[in-house]
Image 1 (tube, helix red, strand yellow):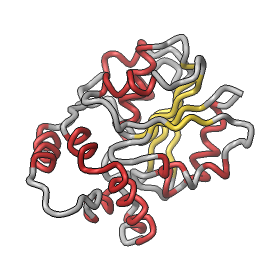
Image 2 (cartoon, rainbow, N blue to C red; image 1 turned 90 degrees about the vertical axis):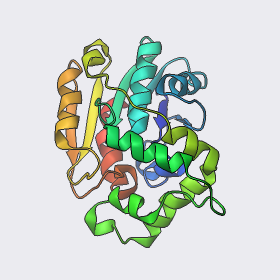
Image 3 (cartoon, rainbow, N blue to C red; image 1 turned 180 degrees about the vertical axis):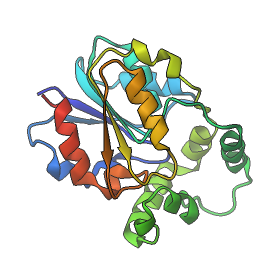
Length: 227
């Protein structure tokens, strides 16, 4: 079975996938990528690729989707299939760049405790915005990564690559959430329309953090890339 490389998103680590693991095929080899290294999307992609097996399937979540597409461009012959989850090909808005830069450059006060409650809640389905278990799980991922990674990732600017999507030739699955407050449905459709032969699937009852909110549904959808 072809190994699956999992790339998390902004201030997230391997725990993003914990809920999904029991629903994946037992024989599927998994490789957990990290975005703790690199000060650009390209540098992150190079760091991820350095630890990938010779041939692999690839899943990129949110910011990890930008990194995943860059990995495909760096090594198109090695990536057998691609899943892009809750992500986009659009550039960051100037306000987003300004807000993240301001947060990164703010003078530290006390011990770094991960992302703030309001930011995490916005990433969840409205029904989960007060789910303490989910809020804590996301906060702890950020806390484990630490302030240095927070600053580095916050200063990374995601540039548009919509015009380069037709260059992706491997089988591709685009997964969106019906109630994603961070990524609009049009962004998922742009990805699916731009990548030749890509398939778009929408997960109901989920916000941006699909792997945490609907892990079984996501695992079931991903079976298409294990074949």
